[in-house]
Amino acid sequence: MHAPAHYRMSAELATIIDLIRYGASRFGAAGLTFGHSYDNALDEATQLVLHALYLPHDMNPVYGQARVTAEEKATVLALFERRIRERIPAAYLTGEAWFAGLSFKTDPRALVPRSPIAELIEAGFHPWLGDLEVHRALDLCTGSGCIAIAMAHYNADCQVDAVDISDDALALAEENSIRLHAPNVRLLKSDLFGALVGETYDLIVSNPPYVTHDEVAALPPEYAHEPDLGLRAGDDGLDLALKILCDAPEHLNDDGMLIVEVGESESALVELLPEIPFAWIEFKVGQMGIFAIGRDALVAHHARIKELADAR
Image (cartoon, rainbow, N blue to C red; front, top):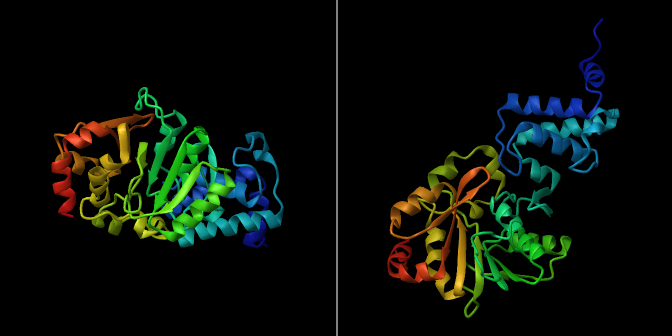
């Protein structure tokens, strides 16, 4: 006589590492999409298991052989089922995402933190800022607040304004500001630069929406859990980026620098403005659609940029 399936599974999945391996296999078989903090099934399964067991995300692998109780196993497997059935990104299931070495609260009020700008922040934006000293910085379209708060964390002498049009996103950013003790961050509601009249900065950083209408329609189900407002940016993904390029000179100090993420819309931007000397930043994994440009270049090409921005 065969034992019931749940008894057999209890015997077969005995340790933490068993559960991680099982979850990764289930995720792979289900054809899940990764890219919200983690880019593969094994890492997502690891984080879900550790979260369910109240263990640190960077737990020593030696504990992988620790056995789990039946109750713990049931909790982990239920989390796996939600990930598969509802296609919710793992970071929303755990309520946590790591960005620039910091733990951020994350939920559907804003996109899951995942920008490669984290690498720039940890490197102090070297070498892109040259000798520029950053006393005031702006994070435009701040979402969860991850870029602004990380900038403030790694440069305690810098005052950082974090701007978003979404009340929900700003509420989450405020929770993260408190969570990560960031007194040098000021949260402001604004439609891009709309409420920032007279404010100027040494550095403006932005990870605005840059996904085209067609791309949004084709996104895997995981992305449907994120706010559409944080993704969609017109037919070529540049509706917001062009407005930022147009208005940034007014809010940059003389030697100021603008850094913007446009992702897959990089080619469309280069095609629209081939004459502009965008510096496309190389990351450890290559180019990621993020450019740096100084105020002088923006001023020199302002007429053409404004013409394109006004046409949107």
